[in-house]
Length: 430
Image (cartoon, rainbow, N blue to C red; front, side, top):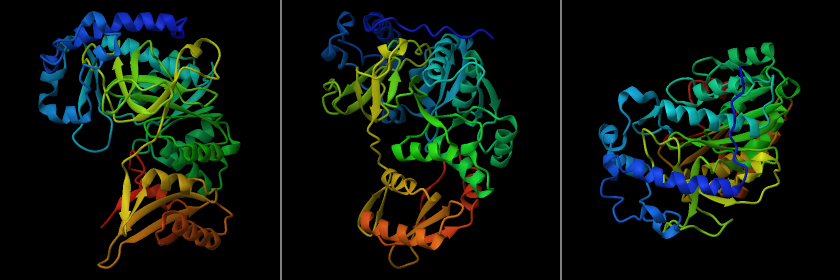
């Protein structure tokens, strides 16, 4: 198969010219949706490069979509006739009633372009073989990455998630077919590595040289644990169902290089909606410039806090794109005996302990004080009592909560997590 032309812009000026032309088209396209009727009045379409004029366009977020409602979404927000729709994408997230976003054939052409760029900047090579473990159901990611692998010179094993192809079968495929790339959610990559370790299999000494992950936040601690477990370089991928797959991590691992010729990326003050100075943290707001033929999102915000810079260590044709880094701010936390424990911080804390393969926290209450129960699985050859005792002390010191530690047999959590798209490491059972 002939590889897809990545159509990379030659300069930042070319990107600015594309944005100038396409912003006007994006606003005009959005004006066809019932939702935007009356909401774009008074905006001077010839002054969209003025930040104050552009900021008059209302930000759309998940709360906006909840207000529209699942039953009204197609009528209020979708503009493509049925005959132009190629497929539907399920909205991300694990809670609430999902939306299904239509994508036209024209949308799909730009989608494939964006994903093929991700394969390239992440270091995929002609002749690589990828074991693809993203879900292959109604979530679009698995289907899209598998399709574009071939367009990027990469062979693909369509494994899907553990819910579709059991993890033991996936491990057997990896050992027998010897892929050079593994792709999936970070939590599932750790799950497979823990399953291998429980069987005495050293994945770090096997054939996978590169791990590509997405759909979950990737902290430095989780990246380091994946690298140790697989003995491979880890690259992160960025995208959302609403706006497309718009960036990826390069060999320098300095953040996502984002396709600013495909979408307008803003980092804005959460109160004023105006841009913050380069390099400062702010709310990420994205307007797709080409994947807007069915759902014309303007200034979409997922609530992520990021910083963005034009400078990069990267050279070559991808160096024209800026670098975006997530602040990894999260609202996930437990309140235990008056103490707030941030899920992401606790996960990083545990993943930095190399003797622990995996863990699950359950918050229990049997009628008295809350119980902070931490179940752990150990790496082969570790001194379980010593590690458990050390972990208990470190949790008390760091989080000011006395835990209850349970050491599980290897593979116990793997069985519990098998049917979940995302590993449920934090469970409130009170």
